[in-house]
Image (cartoon, rainbow, N blue to C red; front, side):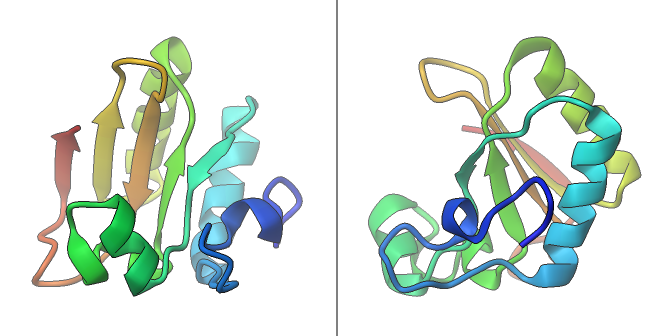
Length: 122
């Protein structure tokens, strides 16, 4: 999809083939270029059915919009990513920095269901 993010790592994990919105991923790509460090994708696009099976947000969580991504980073790179993401206009930032699956969630949603700007932890 972009030079640093492939369709295979971005598509819904259920096999349906859903991908994130291209303009959203172009913004993530610009962030990756500025960051200068790898940004492994834990999760990106999710269809409603898959999202309901893996998230407490049910069938219409942020990932179902095609405008959300979870980046597997921790420590110093997590801090840097959050700082840069705010400057890039990402308005939803979720922080998971415990255990084996550490990541930062980024989205740029504009929806009454998901008030933005917002920061939360998992």
